[in-house]
Amino acid sequence: MYLLFRDKNILPGSYYNLPEGDKVVIRAFMEKYYEELSKHGERY
Image (cartoon, rainbow, N blue to C red; front, top):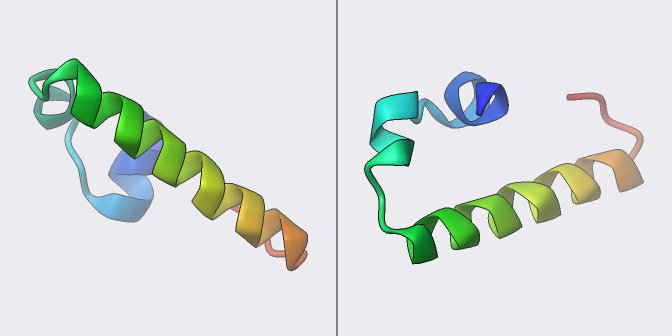
C-alpha cells in the first residue's frame, strides 16, 4: 500500500474502494513493475 501511495499517488481509501478485480490487476502490475526495477539493479 505504501508503494502505491509513494510511487503512484493512489490513496489507501481509493484503493480499498476499488472492486476486487481491479485490486488484483493493480497488485499484479505493481509486482511486475518492481520486478523489472530489481532486474536493472534499481532500488525502490
